[in-house]
Length: 218
Image 1 (cartoon, rainbow, N blue to C red):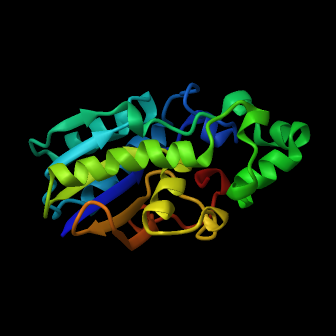
Image 2 (cartoon, rainbow, N blue to C red; image 1 turned 30 degrees about the horizontal axis):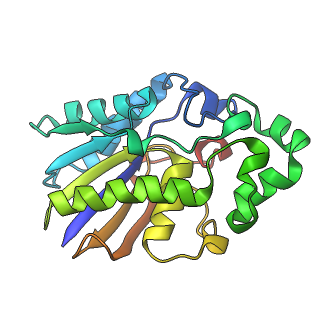
């Protein structure tokens, strides 16, 4: 059994400001995120990790590097461009409210009805393109690490779509489980690097947060 620990990067300035970052925007991690990455590492202290894979975007790459640093073990790190965030086209850099005002139907479908989302309108990737890209990477990592634990550090929109697709969720229902929070852990299991089951979704219990911040989750 291979276990995949899928981590959304630490919270950034644009996350806090409710801006879309996508594949090209890349604001810095908040100071508080470095402490949260340390708490993430403590939650994984007893997990033997064979390999860490990360998106090349700085917010994910730094999250992965700091995680390994806090684990204080010689764990190999591979940066893979297939793990970058959903290319959000014209939405990148915009506040959520401004996107909603300009493209209300497109944003509603992006958030709630992926099967109806018109990627051409926003000049973005489609959900299927993201799922194919990120999914192929995760399957390859599992093939390379049979019966081991691996960590994948990527992004909220890309991970949300891909994780749900890997466990067989239809496109129309990709968002039914809700979003993924910054520095969260979701765990998938597989025996053959093709069929996956969900063990844990969007766990942030180790961050010990006492109140819900809507800017944490996408």
